[in-house]
Picture 1 (cartoon, rainbow, N blue to C red):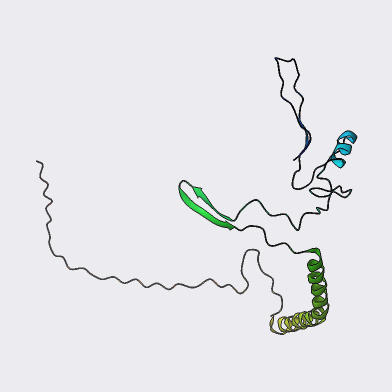
Picture 2: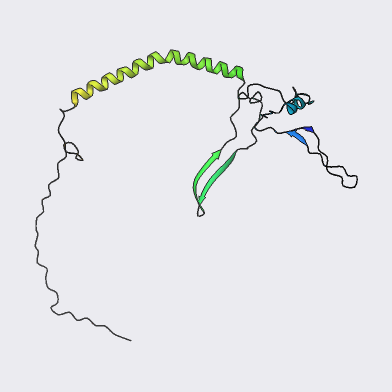
Length: 181
């Protein structure tokens, strides 16, 4: 936040009214100032070109490479009825690369892709052709199937034999005794 004009509290004994503070607040390193009066005051601020700069293109953040994340690394555990459901570790932001290094990495990736692409395409086409030949040679001719049935599915046959065995009789009379107390 940049204070363009400091405020002053009201002083009822002398009859001086309150003067509000005039400031510009930055959000994610960018402040959008649209009023001409505020633009003039912002350009006249002593921190201009050292603490902040003016940019016509708002989509590019000039301080993106030097800004440090304010959120530290931490662990998040989701609980449901006191039982942990998921556990997630959130690390801080990855280290940022300078634009020069980003351009070098991008150019190296493009060169690597150019050298790898022809062999990758050739290998992929060979695999497709060989898989197509194998499927044509081994696949039986198309059979008409009923919907919902697997091809070649046969219901297993179950053969059951009845075995009748006689159990010996141990007692002819059984008494059930129950006592009530």
